[in-house]
Length: 133
Ligand code: ZN
Image 1 (cartoon, helix red, strand yellow):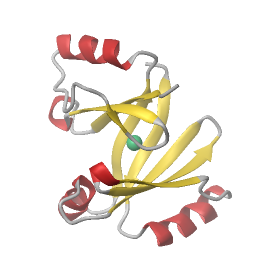
Image 2 (cartoon, helix red, strand yellow):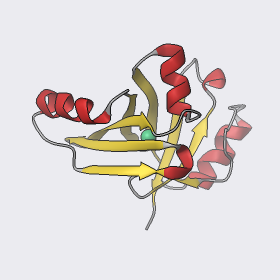
Image 3 (spheres, protein in one colour):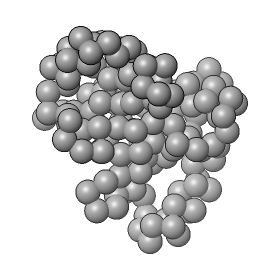
């Protein structure tokens, strides 16, 4: 794994949170993107090498809606940048981690993504992401 690519934060209202994070970070969101298959609207902020991804549910059965109903707003996942996502998945599977989707899917921000179940990672949802060339 190369670095923490971004932190994902679940929010109720992405418009309001965009204003809040713009004030907090001193720069505006550089990309707002809806990932329809996941039922989320995302907004990205850059801070040096790292990013913050805000996530708002666009439908009631979206994983973000479920997360907020259960835990409230807050950090939803940590995303690690990887060079070869298939290889990382194979390695982590062998190490006993529970992979939520073994076949990488198309995520926001031009990435292939795989998620690890929080049950196997001390309670934190982990995302692996690889830039699509
Ligand atoms: Zn993410």
